[in-house]
Amino acid sequence: MNVPFELRFKRAMSKSAASLLFAGLLSNPALAQEDSFPILFTNVHVFDGVNAERIENANVLVVDNLIAEVSSETLAVANAKIIDGGGRTLMPGLIDAHVHMAITEPVADLRDNFDWMYWGAVSTSEAEKMLLRGFTTVRDAGGPAIGLQKAIDRGKAVGPRIYPSGPVISQTSGHGEHRVYTEPHPNFMGAQPSFFNQHVEFLADGVPEVLRATREALRLGATQIKVMAGGGVSSSVDPLHTVQGLPEELEASVKAATDWDTYVMVHAYNDDSILRSLEAGVISIEHGQLMTEVSAQAIKDADAWIVPFYSLLGLDEETVAKALGPTAGAKFLSVQAGARNQMKLIKDFGIEKVAFSTDIIGDPVALSKQNDEFQYRTEVWSSYEILVQATSKTAELLALSGKLNPYVDGPLGVISEGAYADILLVDGNPVEDVTILVDYANNIDFIMKDGVIYKNALE
Image 1 (tube, rainbow, N blue to C red):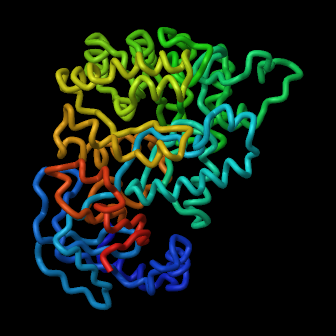
Image 2: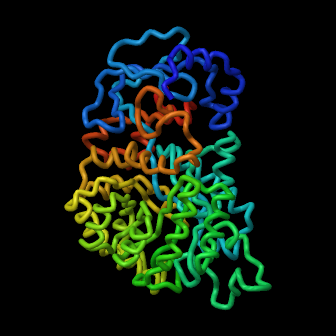
Image 3: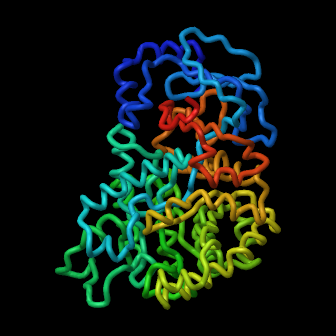
């Protein structure tokens, strides 16, 4: 990790210029990097992902795909490409802890109206758009994103680096149920599992099936495991009050994940689901908008993570009813009603392990509003607190994938020596006003991921 600068510089110099040029051409021919020389950012104010005070008038040196030096002193580097930040804020790339990279159309259409080639093509297109919103890393919370991750990592597609969960694990009649009423169970003798059931969700009942589903997700390439522990909005057969996964089933998944040096994240809204999950050893609670003081205290005591999203606050009742119908619409409004109370509870109980997430699925238009989450969180948190959540804090959560972590060249979510060169240049000071990130097209002028430039509006 702490490789001397001279060695990193020599390694960068020895790399083929053609290979880096190809990476730049793949992302955007107009932005292709001309060589493999270092990149020196000058005239920038650095938010390092941790500290509230920016490093004023700083210089940041990138060698290969890592940050080699951050200094308030002038840096003189031979053969470096100079990028004058013009007084902008240089900050880490954004991280979203709960996305569904491959659920970019309504679930019913994905099940019945599109083949997997269309599905993959649309997911690839949306991945590039997400990167251009400033998100250089995401944790996928369920779906066939493992192949997309491989395509991006191998330079065959453009998008954020992905921590995939693979197929979600759900009990029969749980939040992972999207069968039509007359469709046979995929695990019953003679039934033929669909692509959806093979790559989006596993139905598993009892300890042996849960163990098999967990191990199968790990075999496919999951970096952490996603389990449904309570009722949800988009599924039609499980009311919100339901608790899903017996204690022994949840414990089985946690133990199997722990054996692989990783962890379980659970979909849960209500107290009973949250408490049962924590007792089973779950360390990442997704959503939780219906939690009360009981859950807040339990999360605090367990030193667990809460991964909420507040994009639902931007939708009115009429829009929800039209988009989701009466059943799902009513469930959505119940979750929406608990969101502001949840924010207050998290703040009042001093829960520190809060990740940034959006959980927008099924609609490319809605996905384009991913950055609106920064606006909603200002109701409770300061701009600085939200920026930390969207950078170093969420990076801390993703690193819990342990030996399955596919991105170990350096830390994510920070601007520091040895960290990944995931860099944004922002017109303004998001530490004081994080809402400028909502208008990402106009205010995020430069995007670098893994040392490769994907947007440069400075020239």
